[in-house]
Image (cartoon, rainbow, N blue to C red; front, side, top):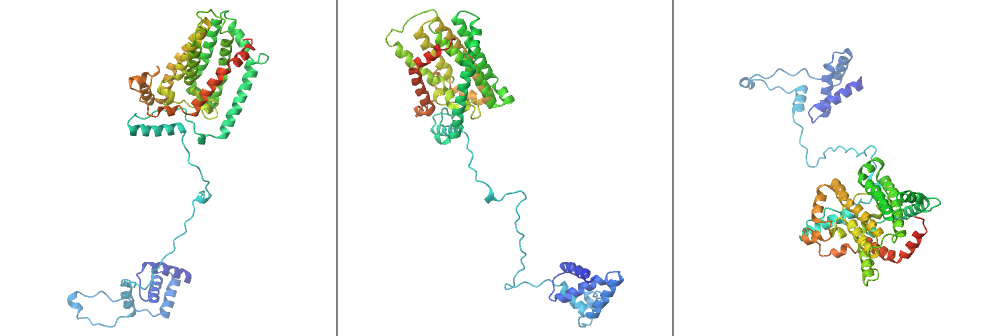
Length: 440
């Protein structure tokens, strides 16, 4: 019981004003609590408390009005009135030498399931791909120099050694080896592959080499352009990498069959002209073929995507060869076909040129359609700045070349194309000998 009354007195003390005599203040509070209770045990406790500390009777009635207050006797203040006066008084001011009571701050507790900063692993900042980053830098530079309106596409043929991963190129080399081995076993090798059966089936349609070559070109074009047209839908169904594997798995064997058939039958048609003995024609054909390869293979801009090591994307390039023509593969194929048709001068070369140029002409329309669907207004801006006909946008003033335009070609992909083109020229006898071994 004493503990309970002590607790009540402590709670009541918190609501009472401070006093200079804390003992008297606590006694008065306990007395009030015990006396106001109706329980007989608590009333006995109040009686015991008054026996220990005699308490005065209740305070006198209120004073009369001011006119009669001066006539009252000034008797000595009783203990109760003395306590009431002190209890009602405001707390004394603290002097500068007295210390304030400061409650300790609660410790900062860590959040649930939240690791401490020291235990978190250090992470390198994630960078965007180099092409968009370079494009944004070029956009800022061109805008500041006033020489252009800024790039909306990607900077082509960018290759920074510091951004490359050895593991990615190891994967690329392994995938390339597996693809070549599988292509040889499943398609090229007459004893195990299906290439010979496929060529026999197409060759049974006509005895004309021109017709067979056109049919092979059309089959390749339908597979290649058809899969490219349905790329967006196919990638949503099976994913980017799986669709790239499907695309390459169908296109590559058909392309090899068409190329080998052309090499084996390139002189079997009707001879229309003969200029191989004319001085300078060989040099002209060689130079034209060399230039055509610089246009033909912008796919070297993203070899890791071609092999599906990196996630394949539909790129909208804007620099380098794209400033000259928006469709370099079409231009390169036209140059190559004209050069080889001029050199061979027969109907088979003409048939091959008609099929390849027609396929790439469809690719011009289909490529613009896909880019417009993917990039919208940005492609419309790019389309106004570029042209399909080489140098047309530059002559019209729609394409403004930067002062250091030549630097956009001094990059590893273009150097690689140059080396492969020179190597392919000297490897012509080897390629012809390999083709002759196939009964295609």
